[in-house]
Length: 301
Ligand SMILES: Nc1ncnc2c1ncn2[C@@H]1O[C@H](COP(=O)(O)OP(=O)(O)OP(=O)(O)O)[C@@H](O)[C@H]1O
Image 1 (cartoon, protein in one colour):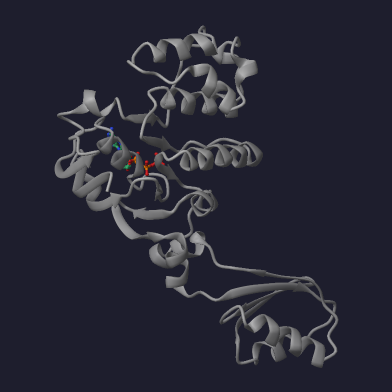
Image 2 (tube, helix red, strand yellow):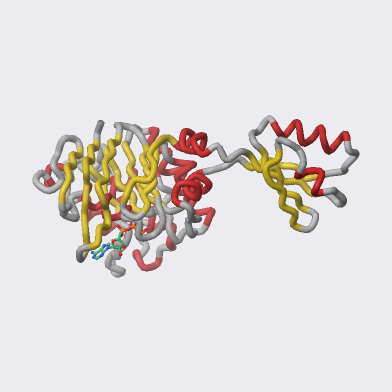
């Protein structure tokens, strides 16, 4: 394992923000710390990064103690903080050069600007960058030390869906290059797409930890099938043994079934009854459902 966290606890003004959290991160994986705002994600991450002092617990990053060996550890890790303000009067290449000067063997920043398609903004003032471009810059700066591990805190918050997806592509590329990535997010679809394993944090505690697939299988919430249809007797549908629940929104019918094999059962039923339907699609449960099941409430977007 490349990161080890045991019994991490941290309080602010007597209130526990992180409560007895333990997990390991393996080399080469994308590990997600996920949960709603205020769950304790940033506190966990920043204790690992040696930026906050835990009340108790044991943390090792590449066998370094983040508090005692911080200087050495920072030769091997890259950190992107949730809120970073850069001097507006600096140009992109100037801040890249500044960051490069902190390290013995920095990655040539021009390579990183190219890798993140930010080369054309090299001479722009940071203040002129879009939100997505600023986030790209923050990850580039985190990669300058040529780290083995990179920490990303809510990297895509505030980005529009397109910029967010494009950022996902860059993060996957980093994994392919062999980096270990530890990220926090409150976007469940982001965690589903990117993470090999996730820890769901709720009120400072780990509510669940596993691969995304295993967590989804665990909740066994069945499959939702949606179709449109002009005329249908909802009662008949509700009486079918494999159907758990039916909802009707104008012409759109939402059917909750036991499992994905019930799709064939449903289609057979509709055809036998001569019911005309269209736009049929199935929706598999995701991390959002896992979160709802485990914590009892929906995560706010
Ligand atoms: N420096 C601090 N002083 C006092 N309370 C704090 C401090 N930092 C965090 N907290 C509190 O600790 C709890 C956990 O905060 P934290 O920032 O770790 O959560 P988070 O899951 O990262 O949330 P977000 O996604 O909103 O950043 C929150 O209730 C927060 O208000």
